[in-house]
Length: 159
Image (tube, rainbow, N blue to C red):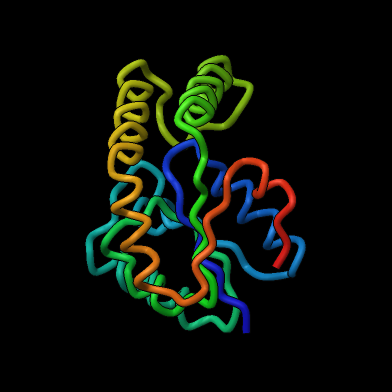
């Protein structure tokens, strides 16, 4: 049984890393944004919780999220909790680069790539950066197998 919960802010590379681990170890990968949202529609709490609990019943999984409180159960059930500790500069560069690609139609977007959305993502990112150390301490309390990876460690990481 392999259960990995990846946590990081917007632009940290959660989806890319989760996909890599999923392919490398033949484990299903789940983005919790897709549990919260059905396209542009936000699911009800009951729908969200039911879908999330169904994911947790699977033997193996790689889950990635920004660390929403409603998904704490997953953190507790994970064999490993991995926090992507990416530098603020890199995070902001990635957010802007992704937004530009989406705005030009070079990358698919699950939302309208408006200036308001770019501003919102940069604000979420800064909020996460400001609370990073406190958040990491909370994550550590959920798992004996807590791993904190920076950009370089992320490139070379294996289970």
